[in-house]
Image (tube, rainbow, N blue to C red):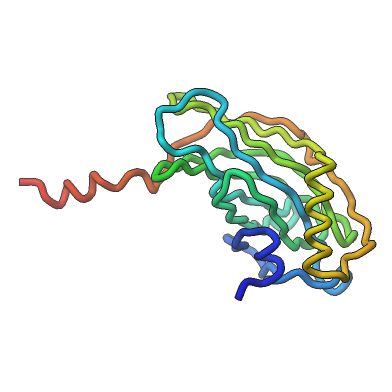
Length: 200
């Protein structure tokens, strides 16, 4: 059975590297870590001959003091996310883009703070992905969309009425716009390994 947090976010939360566990469900504020909310969107910014549209496969957050890393699995081109994090300063340092069997990754660098406040809204993260080519780039633009925030708050309260009336702190990551190089990574189409086994 899905937990409230996983159902709200529509994603699976996982941790990599030197990390501590992420709570698996939405808990009452003050009894757990602060809750961070946002939305991620992926769009192609040019023409593409690939039959698959880009999706955010995952992104990674790093605590700038402890260097603990938290990976959020998204697997979508448009999805809200929530993650419980200890108070501190965090950096978005990596994003993975998938297009069917093709995968690419970019190193990012934008930061935000999580205070002891119960709920933090970090905005709508729009990833604009270049057409497949050499020197492909991805541009991140973060905005404070009032409608996105309102929908996220309403759904959260529906899932756990204890959040009713709890103030949400908007925090805009800095810088709010960045551009980075995309690099193709494994897994790539695996057909070659099949034919390699049948060479003669």
